[in-house]
Every structure is written in structure tokens, then in C-alpha cells.
Length: 235
Image 1 (cartoon, rainbow, N blue to C red):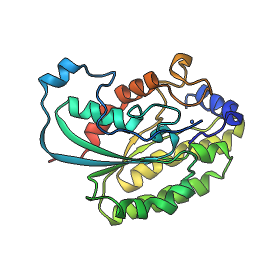
Image 2: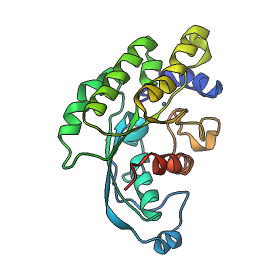
Image 3: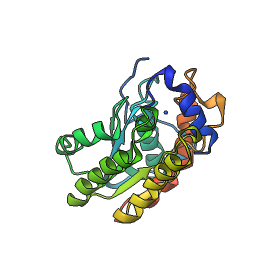
């Protein structure tokens, strides 16, 4: 997601309202997060059946300009395992994806999994903002994805985004409202603004002023891992 340096100012404005190079694949077994230490992980052995999670999004999941094992899904998996949860997270993040592109590949991605995931973490919409696409179109695409996941009886955790104020109050109100409205309609869990913990901290953002650094990813994981644990279906 959040693809080019030419889009920097749009996302900076997005961040200011409080509301994202080459890409490497994530190593889902990468150790360590900001919320846990090796000692903590050793004290909490991984137990129970595997908890399969699909992380479906754009470059914020894909690990844009980060090393292998530094993506959000990889670090999230490590954080969950350090808590004793036998998590396995498949990273289906594709840089540059809009909600329309995500919709086009969702069913194929789900069908390609070895096992039906217990939960999907859905993170899309930022590239729609950067392209100034109508919020109604973003909502329709996300709704269609949620319909597909509901049909397959797969719970969802949505990672929300927020619109920059320069797009106008009507646009902002419509876009910002679509995530909580869809979460309520489909009974999905929601993180209202995925980048809340990093957007105003330049040291946690790459030189493009858009994507989180490796340390920024650690902070994002620390800020959202409780939401993920809460959203996981009870066993």
C-alpha cells in the first residue's frame, strides 16, 4: 500500500488528522517483538493446536522496504507465540493494492490456503485514499470481501484507516465512518486506525515518510496484539 513518494503529503495529512523500493517476503517464524523478550517467550511455551490467521492487505502488511522477517504479520506471529499462542500467520499483503484489487484476489487467496484460516486480518483502503477514490467504492469493495468471508464463516479483524482533511469534510466523514459501520454490520472486530501508534513519530517512519520502519512495525505490533488476541475465536 501507500506506494510512491509522490503520495507522501497525502498520507502526512491523513496522519495529521489523527487518523501508507523493493519489497521482501515475510518470514512467519521471525523471533522477537517490542512487546516481548526472549526470556518472556521462554516462560510462556507455545501450546495447543495451530491457530491459522491470514493477514490480507497492502504494503503495510507486505513488509515494504523491510528485511525478511520484519513485516507486521511476521512480528505479530512472534508476539502471539511469545504469549503461548500457537499462531501461524500467512502474509497475503501486496504493495499497491486498492480495495478493488484486494477483492479480485481474495477468493483465490483463501482457496490457496492449506487450511481454512481461523481469522482474517483485513487491512485495505489506504491506497484508495491516495488515489482519491470515492468512499462509496471502497465501502462496496470491503463489504463484498466481508460477504465472502461471512459466506465461508471466517471471523474478521479490520484494520481501519482515516482520510486526510484536505479531501473535504464530506469525504472525510464518509470514509472515516465506513470501517466502524462495516464492522458493526458484519460483526467484525475493529482497530479504528491501524497507524495510530506510529503516524506522529518520525523516528518510526521510513525515509519516504509513509511506511513504518522495522522499529515502527514493532510498535504497531505492541499496540495491536491485544486486539488480535481478543478477536481470535475462542477454543
